[in-house]
Amino acid sequence: MKVTFDAFTLDSGTRQLLRRAEPIHLSPKAFDLLRLLLERRPAVVGKPEISERVWPGTFVEDASLSVLVAQLRRALDDDPRSPAFIRTAHGRGYAFCGTAQDALPPSVRG
Image (cartoon, rainbow, N blue to C red):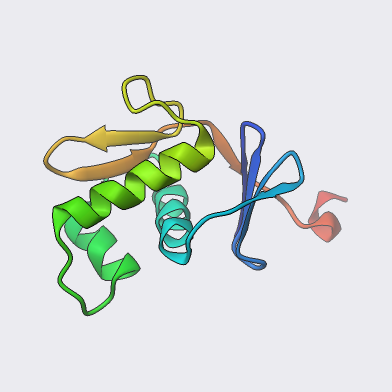
């Protein structure tokens, strides 16, 4: 999966987030969360599903998820009060709210 949004590209094949071709450091869990939100955009992804996908088989406190979302927002320079990318659905979960498009491989572009 390769998705572009704003100046960013998320490439799940290389497990990289790039901003204008420059790598942005994300923890493995933050990368997994961003990928999940992009896969399901624009739908809200519930906290139970996030926990199962990012921390499989482990009980996770809401505070751990909040810390992870804050880390992701910092990497994206996203303001939680006026989000461009990560929207909070209070009491439910999170959603990717930015404009994103799947990047086509060079052979498909023609």
